[in-house]
Length: 399
Image (cartoon, rainbow, N blue to C red; front, side, top):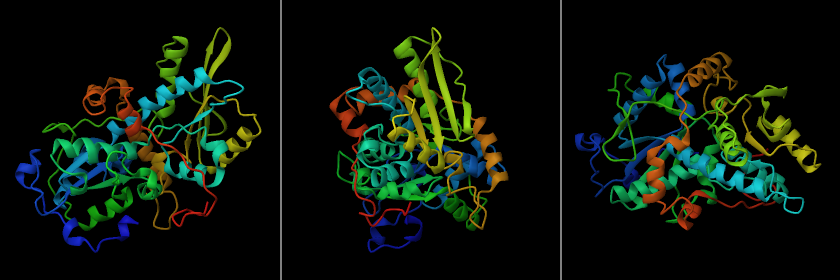
């Protein structure tokens, strides 16, 4: 695990100096001796820092950024823009699958691919009958790796090898995702993410360090801009694939504008349904399945052909990403329910940003990816899945 590897055989090459004032102003770093250290923070981690340190989510973002920079980090980014790409590509793929679905080519339900714990379970345990239903859009972590190691590297006139990229995430499974061969950059053959630290691990570092550090606004991928406003995608503790894809599909397939997505809990609070009716008929039936009890029930019904859903947002953690085991845990390793409730309230109050509204994303499609539906966009933003026998890989978790 990255958190345990504090020293390496290549330690001199991986060491970094504290950023100079020029670097803090967004100017290019002197990398003649050291690697550029970049940290990208998942939006589901911020409510944890806010709740733990009794701050607003904006204050927590600035405190986290300032603490990281005091430790020698050169750039701190937010992964929301990577989730934009993941959601937009998932939207297009769902519409395509819906239109192509038939008795001969059963492309539905489409199952999300953003949760590494769920994807690993599907690949290693469930095999091809289930992985065929996985959305091919890369996860936000994988997209962020390409953004940092390709787009940002070229903006800074750096080779990808000169950047050491760390992800701060609520989930231990993202460490495993970073190690997977599937996380390798299609453009350079180098890992998009070099290390993952959980929110809890970063909080320990912050508590052991200087709590009087100077706060700092988070960086962006676009020059000397600074980002003070914290936003998120729609969804209870997740990256919001269900809500955004549901709205997009309703408009594209049935010309229906859906402003408010209404969830209905079924067998338990971690299995919820969203439907669209037209002329008295249900034309879209989506679900969110969180936790392995719901996932196993879903798989059983899917294999029996008794699963009525067109799309399912699948998350390994009950309660979603906010409840990741890398944060909101008691010293005994149990969920800190009081802290989690506080985090859920903080997360719900963060303004929602629809991925279509980001001008930067549209610019990146043209400038970086050579067009929305270009071969490069397909190569950079999509992946394939390999089904292997259980236990075939030394990195597997014993599910």
